[in-house]
Every structure is written in structure tokens, then in C-alpha cells.
Length: 317
Image (cartoon, rainbow, N blue to C red):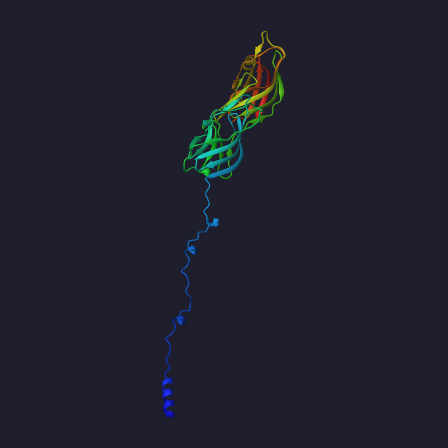
């Protein structure tokens, strides 16, 4: 009885029952909430370092060149080209060399591109007389084409058939201009009836001239192969014919210049009555129509309408 009981107990313990595997044992990660949509829709500011820069349409070039034309000295400081507006602004200083107010005419200067002259929009600007100094005055050249290129453009001053100054706007700013030439003249000439010409200076200028009511002196365009001689003098009438003597008679009748080829030119002056013991200080006397090249000996003659009573040789090299 004892052995049987032991055997029965052995049979029941040889194959113990086991529980099925727990699902918790194979689930290694705890349950989590689905990803928050807030983390996927967060916006960030763009990085300035990767924003494409805006391309400027404005180009400025410093020039600082002087030119002379039609009685003006012009200093071109800089140019500014705005491609979006198709305009070129020329920043410049203008000095009037005439003893009279003078106007600049836009048709006479501008920019040349593709062999075409494009005039400035500057007609009618007026400048004070000689000695006042330069006037700062920018001017605009409008209506430029889409193909306009500063490196291929040239500023021009003066018509093609006249004396023309130019400034190339490409690197280097090659400038072509003709400036007045000072002549070494300082002397006193006398007329037979006592009028004296005390010449203080003289110059050859690449433009035409005329004296209107001394001491007023006007300048204007001249053909590219012509120039003028201008004399500056203190003129005194120690004596004069009865009733006075007009300055135009004094100069046109008694003042002339003999060119190297023998041609004689009369002076171009009019107006103002001069009586005894009158003086015009620093008065201009001008002779237009000098043919270039101007080298040679010029003879200034003071005459009594027939033969010179005094003369002065002026050598131009």
C-alpha cells in the first residue's frame, strides 16, 4: 500500500502543468502615445545666410576729368547709370569763361553709344559770367537702350563738325580735349591820337568769340579747324576826336591782326562811346577765324586806317 501510494505520487509529478507564455514577457516596449503632431508642424525662421541677395541696377564710376568746349570748362566728377530707369546721370562742375552769362545747350553734349549721339536733357541752363567760379550741376541723359554698356560709351561735348571733347567711360577714362593756350604777351601799344593798349594777357581759344558792349565777351562754337585769339588789355583814351569815339570804331578801325599767311583780320566789337581820358580795364579784344594749326608769327597792328602806327609780334609754337 505504501509503495503504490509512492508510485502514484511519482506519476503525477513527472509532467507538471505549465502556464501559457505571458504576453507581457514578449512586449519589451511599454505602450506609448502616438507622436505629437506639434513636433512635426513647428515652423522655423529662414536662415538669412541662404537668402539670395538683391542685384543692384545702379553703377557709379568716379572720373574727375576736365574738358573745355564752347567757352566752358567742365569738370566731370562721376557718372551714375541706372539700368532699371535707362538713365545716365553726369555729376559735373561748369565754369563759364566768357564775360557774359551763357547757356548750355543739351543737343551739344551727351553720350555716344553704338555710333549714335544721345543728347543730354539739359537745354536752357544759364551760368554766370567769367570769374564767378564753377557751378555744381548734374545733368541727365535719358532713354538709353537695354543694351547700353558703360564700357562701350563715350561722353561727348560739342557737335561732330566743331571742336569736340570726349571722355571714354571704360576703365582708364581716356580724355580728348583742347584747352585755351596762354600766349606770352605783356606790352603797351599807342595810337597816334593818344589811345593806349596795355596788354596784360592773351590766349588762343578753340571757339569763336565776339565782344558785345565792352567788356562783355561771348563765346560760341567754331569749326574744328578754326580758333580765336583773345587779348586782354587796359585801354585808355588820353585824347579823342571831337564828339568822342565809339569803341567799335576804335577797335574795328584801328585794331587788326596779320596771320602767318599774310591774311589780315579785323576785330569784332561794337557799342560804347569813349571820350577823352576814359579807361576800360581788362577789356577783351578778339579775332575769330584763326585757321589751325595755329603755329607761326601773328602781328597785332594798331593803325590809323591806312598804315600801322604800332605793332606787336605774337609767336605761337
